[in-house]
Structures are given as C-alpha cells and as structure tokens.
Image (cartoon, rainbow, N blue to C red; front, side, top):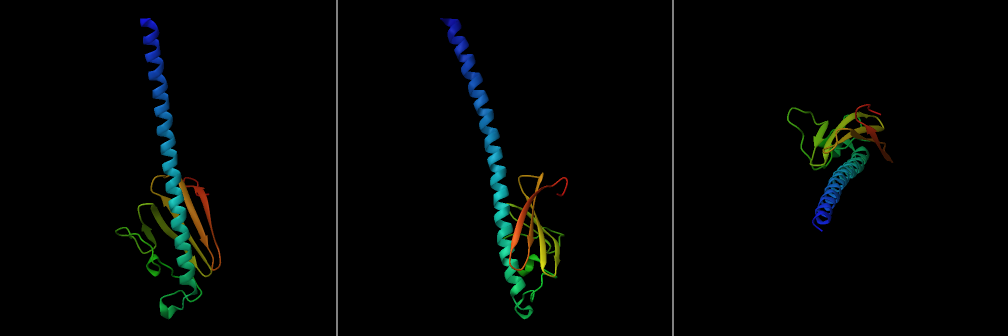
Amino acid sequence: MGQQQLLLVILVTIVVGVAAVVAINTFSNSSENANQDAVRNDLGAIALSSQAYYMRPSMLGGGDKSFTGFTFEGIAFPGLVPEGAEDLVISNENGTYTITSAAGNELVIEGNPAQSNDVLLVATINPNEYSIEVTDADSGS
C-alpha cells in the first residue's frame, strides 16, 4: 500500500506541475493579446482625433484639409512625449506611437505594444477611413 501512495503522490505532483506551466503560458499569451488590443484601440482613437484635426480650419488649430505637419500636440491623446523626442512620438502604458508619415491626405502611425517587441501595429489614416495592420516588427512588413 505504501508504494501505491508514493506513486500517486508523484503522479499528482507531475500533473499539477504541468497544469501550472500551461496556466502560466496561457496567461502570458492573453496578456500580450490584451496589450495589442489596447494599442489597436489607442490607434483608433488617434485616427478619429486626427480626422477631426484634418477637417478643422487652420485658424482653429486644425490641418485645414491636410495632414501635413500633423503632430500629437494637435490632438487630445493621453500620453507623454519621451524626453528628447519631438512631438512625433508619444507613449502611454499601452505602448509607444510614432508618426512615420504626415503628408497631404494620408497619415501613417506605428504603434509598438509595451509588452511585445516582435509585433508592430501600423495605422494608415485617410480623411474618411483608417485601417490598422499588424506586422512583424523585425521585418517591418
């Protein structure tokens, strides 16, 4: 009877260990996915604010039907400009956002999630629509 109990204890220990490892991996993946979703939501908010900036006349602080010269200073977005960076970069607890192109009728902003260095979200914003593409940060596409 003692050997059966010992084998049962060993078996239970192994099962609990495997379950713990699976739970940790699942939690880690869920946390990264939630962070990417938060960055996607932030990019959507930036897109809507930038479209309003596009439509606003220049004497009211808008772009006067152009994204040329757009900076994060022109919109209300909760975040901080990192020290030494221009107004083209802003970050918050979700990630870092960089304006890569702001000319004419198109604005391109990259969002780098705080919890994942291998994924990059790229928002392409036009006056009437926007799209967000998930890319591999290493390859850039």
